[in-house]
Amino acid sequence: MSVESVRIPELSAAGAAMVPSFRHVYGDSPEQFVEVFGDPAAASATVVFVHGGYFRPRTDLAHARPLARALAEAGVLVASVEYRRLGGQPLLLDDVTAGIDSVCTGLTGWGVSEHARQNLIVSGHSAGGCLVLAWASHLPEEGPRIRLRPLAPVTDLLREVEAGLGDGAVLDYMGVRPEDDLEAYLRHDPRSRAVCIPARVDVHSIHGNADATVDVEFSRVFPAALTELAGANHADVIDPDSPFFPQVRSLLLG
Image (cartoon, rainbow, N blue to C red; front, side, top):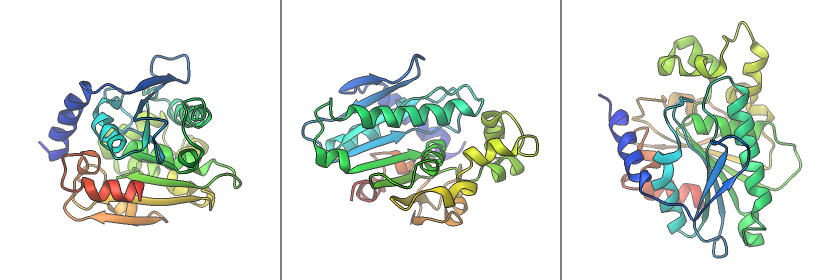
């Protein structure tokens, strides 16, 4: 059994007991909501976070609650986005886009200062890293600056399918092979769309070089800044109890 398969459930168990400051609904589905951690009035920055789970329905945002709480304790507002995880590629990216848009629209009404609204960080772990990279690639050139901080992101959907990685998770997510619907992949694949990410988005990936779930090589060949964490595995980058967490937090918020 890999380290990742042990530690992610542990994080989920810890997260189950954590209660967010409030929940924000952005759609009609029970899974279209955002959990908000921290004090909106006192926040120095806003972090929108998209959890991972290799696009599988069984993994929800519970395992990311310890990370959200730890970041909120550092003085920022954390909005953790849940999304429909039923497969069929439009749902996930559309939900993440709607969730992030809804958070950004709601910040003023939540009492978040202009400084914290403009100090916007968007992050995602694993499949969530894939989703925020794809989201950023569809943004217009003009707009506010955004710091994008993918954690151990899935960056190449075509290569994932070709190699059969993740027990076929990407193929299940997309619902079709690239040769049967290349257009769908070209809408969702971060590696194919990297050139479309506008210059106002500062992309900096964080990835452990001992990651046995998403190989760090994917981040090495992605055209963006990368910090490799020597010895860190897939869960270490979101685990507040990990020895790597202080560096992850600094890279996210600094």
